Amino acid sequence: MSHDLNQRRAAYWDKQAGRYDREMNFWDRHLFGDSRPWACGRAAGDVLEVAVGTGRNLSFYPDGVRLTGVDWSPAMLGLARERAAALGREADLRQGDAQALDFPDESFDTVLCALGLCAIPDDRRAVTEMARVLRPGGRLLLVDHVAASASPLRAVQWLYERVTIPLAGEHFRRRPLIYLRELGFLIEESERFKLGVVERVCARKPG
Image (cartoon, rainbow, N blue to C red; front, top):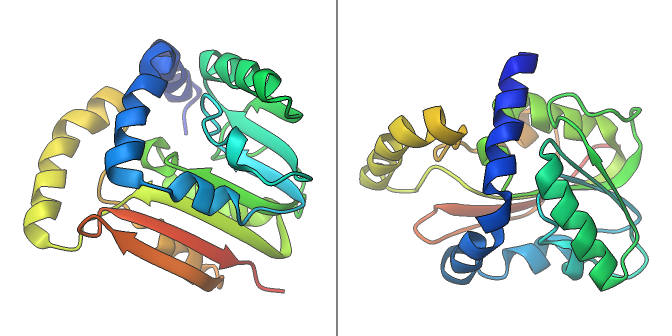
């Protein structure tokens, strides 16, 4: 992935940072429901959140987790640090690329990505990186909007992508669950709802 493209994507999300929470309040209420607490409540130990954004998930983590978060937008990270301070939650929040995580192999007990893979250019590479830094037996937790169950709705998603991919790198028809199965993960929980548009997965790394 080119450095220039990463810089353009970071600049785009920097511009969105100030209004991101207002927009996501609507989507969390009407589309994603309790998916954030669902995912964070299954995290334990040394936790890496990929695409931590403005830190919307910080309040949902159990006490005792040791949290690291990465995002490629400095503006988003600034808001996440403010949120962590207000919550009194310790978290190592740093700039980073989900497609090339700057951590050694097998560094974390849990890796979580909620509503981030849809906007990462190479989602397969990002999932492979998450698997690499996860310890054997660790959990990978994913929440995202995915390809709908019905073909007419997938056609609508395809039309949306004609605009959203060039503008924001936003994809609507991905299925990261497929990559987890290819990597040999044990799928402990998998749920789709809202006509199959939303999927959340709890998977365990072999070993």
